[in-house]
Length: 345
Image (cartoon, rainbow, N blue to C red; front, side, top):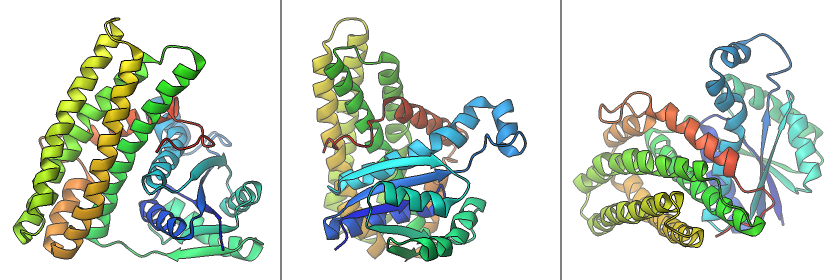
């Protein structure tokens, strides 16, 4: 039976679904996963959109062509950790995906490559899709191609919710690793990164994600059934508890910044908050999302998907999504734990 899966990812929305399928498959087998991303070599030529973006907007270039790989892999690792699946990740720069995937499978001693059959939804999806047959015909390692199709509104919305959960989990793992590394090395953790994490949690999960859940997903589910009300009530109480725990944690970080708190106290508070959030997200994904899939109708998912597809609600502002993606990328690139490190939960 297969024990070590290589799961190639690209930056299309289908990767969210691919990660979920791969994690469930690996969990069933008792296998581990190495997530892999092959990025095109944008520095090879001095022309094209990448170079225009690099010259006109270095921050956007850094996110789109450098930080994006780490973001994809970090969130995939978080999805695996949440299900107790051992994982690692690696990336490379290569303009021939099938060769890069095959080389990665060989170098990591994987015994199965699991990848999605990509449609024509993006240039990168087309490129990777066109390489699938070459991988199958050239690989001595078994290749399992997971069929994908244009996702429904429900699948799109649930994918975004899970992706935002993975972002939150990845940031918390990054924070725990930052503190652990500082303790092991006998150094002070980077205060600027910790303050960036505080800002991210306050403004994105609490300021955007939770309100959208309550205003759209929870509300629609209450309208369709009373069977989930007790769980929804509990999750809303946990949202309030989240604010209380996080405010105390943010205050502790500021006290530490001014010499009024010990770093051991900060680390303990972060670990407590992380455990709370992992339990909260697991409860929502294990109970509420399946209930929503059962009871909500197509017109409900149209509204929910519109809310979660872009932060275009007037209360949220127009550019928040891109801004916090860049902030997330900065956090995980600066503080992400090495792939070979044992997961922390």
